[in-house]
Image 1 (cartoon, each protein chain N blue to C red):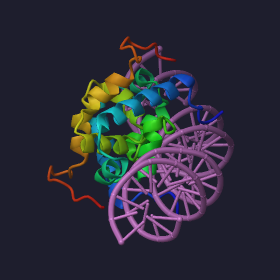
Image 2 (image 1 turned 180 degrees about the vertical axis):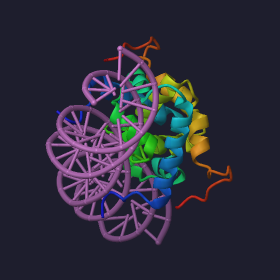
Image 3 (image 1 turned 30 degrees about the vertical axis):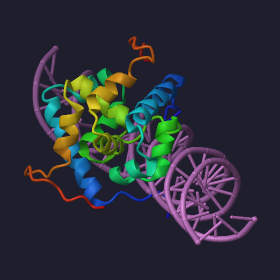
Length: 91
Length: 91
DNA sequence: TCTTATACCGGTATTAGTATCACGGGCATG
DNA sequence: CATGCCCGTGATACTAATACCGGTATAAGA
């Protein structure tokens, strides 16, 4: 084994992450935010739907800038469960 | 063409990014920080040397947590030139 | 000198992120 | 009703990130 496959926990974290982005997007359209962040709309959709659970750092940074949200809050929020309780790390 | 190859600008940004991490690491060893962040030492080395210019968001988040640094400051710092001036975006 | 620890480098294998293409649904306007 | 436009989606293609292995160099210490 070379590259560790994503664990279920990581995929769930990706779903929470995407939900946060979609919530932050609000009324604005995908293409609008994607264009503002400089990524393709399909990429944004995959991230929001959790199908790209571990996006690139600068992709997230650009999206966060377009959405005017904090990276630290974003990382902290999706490292917690949907109920807000701290999540047990897999390793 | 499907996935756009990394531009020279992105690679340079990756080098600045790695330099920031290395500077923040200070005296501590690579394996120590890598273990604390839950990534392999090779991955941390590649990121620090700029050979992995666009690491995953959660990888960076874990490293930043291990180094006790802010993701927002990190993203803001490496989006600027080494001299501190704002960098022109490629797109 | 020999061992140990750290870091760098090259190669290799495998998974995942990102972009393009093609398709269908909703909605307005002709 | 037909046409176009925007949004979202599924399939496909290609590159990059991550991890493991072996080798090399350097410095510290027994």
